Image (tube, rainbow, N blue to C red; front, side, top):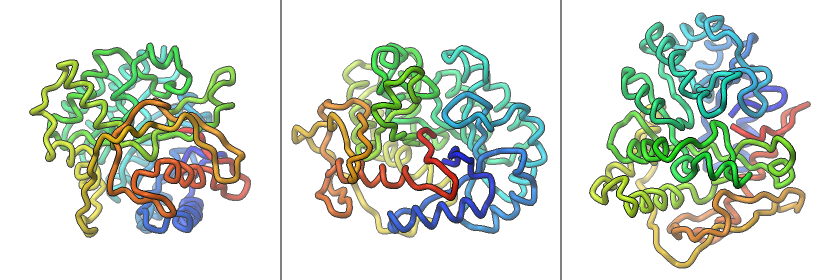
Length: 345
């Protein structure tokens, strides 16, 4: 995500960031994005499309999440940019919340903007990122095929009550009601190409989470798949969804195929499968960076989790979540000149 300080608003910044990320994780295909800002115009969009590494532009309404103070105040001001994005086939990634609205209603209040952008630019590919409400799910269903939504693992588990009681479950958009959670769970397995997984994993330190006005974001990287499957298993037990809903085809679409297809990523890699088994594995109570300077608490820390195999992180064993998490911390701490790492997506 591009919400660093300063934000990634130029293609040259994205290229530099991509090089640094690739040195740490050369086996990962990073899809870079720009931060929508007055400096992003039609020429920048053309350059981004030419780069072959920038796939989208992220719209942050001003003040709604971490490092969004430089975000958008007037969405229609950027219609010429959206037109250029439609021409060059870049994705518009939306943080769908309206500033100045109670956080429980901020996503629903934003949806008319989503619908208006889609109506004006029907061929512009749009993603409502980290959808958190049944209204958001319904709005995406009602739009054309150019509009999709991502759903996080933590929104499949959490509600507002969790976020209010546990700072490590607090994120933006904030988790909503049990009814919203059920709508997200059903969307994840309904077989529609409209919905796919997006981690929105945020490696905030313990200090930044526990301070007044704590940082918004949940750290899930390293066990995202297991968290999704665990949430679906819980939903079956609650009879919110049925066992028959959770097919390999539905899971493959949600966790892999739908997102890759929407971003038009060729399926050139060998087919790999993840096997989940119960071996008493638990999410670590905390993770410390390799240099010992950062300690964070993962989402659902200490809870039993499915064991993922084969999932081999370099230098670790299958399912070695600590190694995966430390590599994620290394990625999150990258800096461009004069820049601090973003702590939320």
